[in-house]
Amino acid sequence: FFPAEAFEKSLPLEVLNYVEEHEDDDCNPLYWILLISGISAMALKNRGIWRYMFNNFKLLRALNYERTTGDLFVGFKLPSDIGNLIHLRFLSLKDLEFLWPKLPSSLGNLRYLQTLDLRVDSDKIHVPNVIWRMEQLRHLYLPFECKSSTKLKLGTLRKLLTLVNFNTKNCYLKDLINMTNIRELGINFPFNIENFNEKELGKNPPIIGSKYLHSLFIVATGESCSEIDPRHLVHLLSNCTRRSNANTGEAA
Image (cartoon, rainbow, N blue to C red; front, side):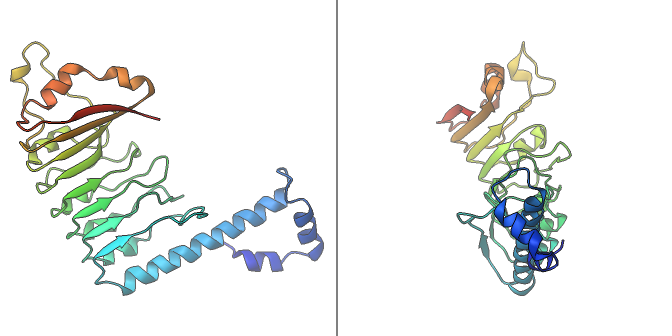
């Protein structure tokens, strides 16, 4: 992308004056060209800062990027260099916006992560199937909505205590049985139980393997709230001996 300052200097003064006089005109194509050029330059600058940090702060233990007021977005994509931070224990990308809706597979290098927050501010994003490598994870927050190409294996995360935004479209239902320490579980639709025995519930295999679950929260949107089958909920909790809080909620 062409830097904004260099782009402006390449234009005649008459053109720049015209753009300035008509900056409130939504139909002014020159104004939008300059605006997009400026955003592109800002995105590249931010990405350069990230790449420098990822390549020079290799002993970093915690990275929590807080989006500041006025930020349009952080960048077009998360640099693959983030995989160099192999000592990270805590990584939060919450509320960050990426115009390139695909996270790098180098995230799988972060084997010592204990907390991973991927609740980015993007409509849909692709998460590579590498989270299963992070066997030290205690707290995992998945995006609210992933692309259909995302399919995550999570059965190796036996130390997981918190799992948020789980669904059966982007994850495997059978992996919940291996999470024997799970305390808090947040489910987003869709949530489907395959080969569900409606007549004899006791013959269905257990879904949740943890006996410590104390919080279950189900988020549905719009009409999907009415699609929650009470029998599925009962069976979901059938193996939980310490169940104390099960809620369903409708997302705004």
